[in-house]
View 1 (cartoon, rainbow, N blue to C red):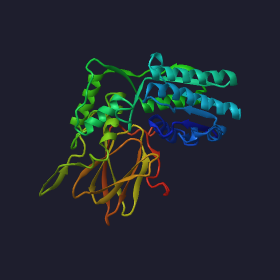
View 2 (view 1 turned 90 degrees about the horizontal axis):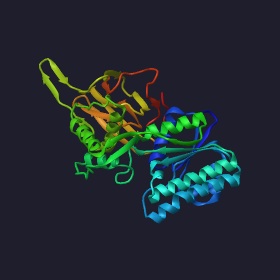
View 3 (view 1 turned 45 degrees about the vertical axis):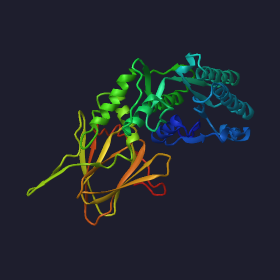
View 4 (view 1 turned 135 degrees about the vertical axis):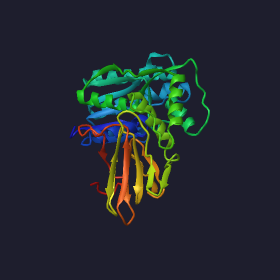
Length: 377
């Protein structure tokens, strides 16, 4: 993908942020051009955006608001984008994030269907590939509660100990937004066009809520819920953890001591879990990387350390001062770069727990400095 320039409309939204994270991890040589509301403010800024793109992923749109606003906005954005393409004569591979709501007669469904037709019409006129990816309900880390999905709302409420309204007869078809992002990457790689219906997992709403509640009840002290039994369970657990961070950390552990020394349980997990440790010399920093899927826990056993965590494409760094004298656990949220620094005078001993066995062929570890001005080594 070296030399490829991928433009993303709606890059600051839920799907846009996740897509940028996956591109950063898996296509680091591709150039990314994010577009936001200001980009659509004039044909000049929009023309400048499309001018250098070999691929455009169109995610911008509205799914909340008055019916009239939704009916107007989604087709208008498609019109504005295709007008800019016609004005510049550019013919990028155009990928549209469509929705299963297009099959319904709601304002949102109608507007998505019309937007798709506008983009497909431009593709026929320009002889350019246009792919409409029809996604079910997307969920994942950092979705907006009461906006993006029921999962986001439930996780927000459960993490705060608030009650939830659960539709006892409701069902939903769910797809994690990182899986949706991978479909986009596959579409880019294959140069595909046409309409593709992307399948998710169907769940009853009460079952979904019960899973999330069970995860929260199990997730305390050294206990980590079984997040390896299914791909969906790990995704739901990682989504829930994103709503618990940073307020639920560090997690207090129990240290038992007698005349022989001490014992402290780091994590009680399931299936293919892995526990490892490292020693670190004074002043040295380890890490400066992020994960897409991995559930990972840090526990300092001896020495003093600072753990720093930063969400991708954000400037806020969360800092935890930890010590082997008072064992605590800090779990690394997915899609957050993190590191650990020995700030003591002696050697630092740190234990690491992960939910799966390390696979050198697919390490799920991507370099990214927590402090963006620093060089990763």
